[in-house]
Image 1 (cartoon, helix red, strand yellow):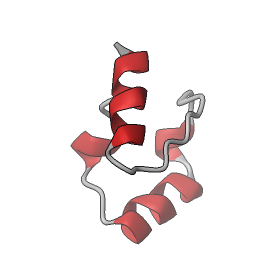
Image 2: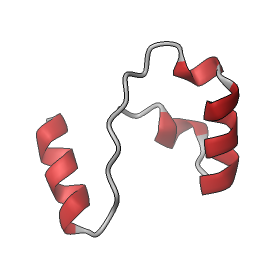
Image 3: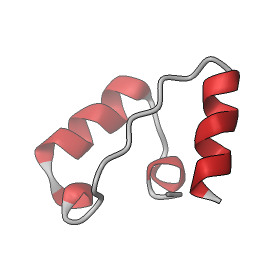
Length: 47
């Protein structure tokens, strides 16, 4: 499923960055990226 989502995103022109999500939702960097990219919580926690 992840492979399909990555390929589809690349075809749509998105830049895909894969990260290890462990502990990232409580970090300052996570908050900064959410505000910078104007993402809602449900989008950033989807994968």
